[in-house]
Length: 167
Image (cartoon, rainbow, N blue to C red; front, side, top):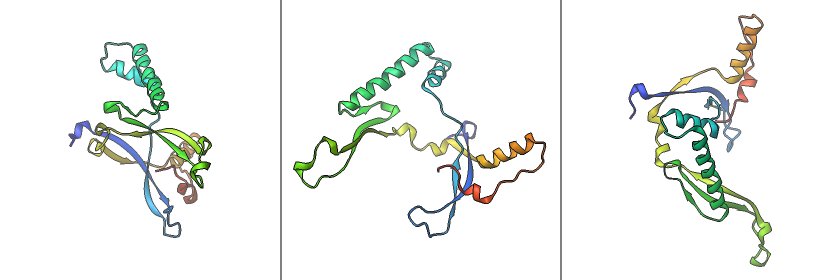
């Protein structure tokens, strides 16, 4: 378990959602992760450099880009790609079934994609985080809008709250 000083804070809001398998069941309260944004490959390369890499951002970005390109190249050749602690990519496809062997052709394939599997490094991260409840994005926006207008109260409806982001 991580010590208290190494915890990272993960923010969440709450919202009501139906059970998609049993929509007639009463709605339940679920947490919605409040993401902080997206880190691009370029930002990741810069961050690696700032963590003491002897290589410049341009070299790191070049290597990461080559890893992406080569991983895709191997996947389209039917190889599984094991990137160690970064995880594993396996080729996969979607298809439509055929009534018999004679009628199955390449046209039955509807998608070719990669399936990502995390390495052990990315499992059990719960011990490294603490959770902080925050207002929903809609409530935050309503508060900012009210503040911009010089108002001391904000209003948003319960109905709007239910259309919260995905879990």
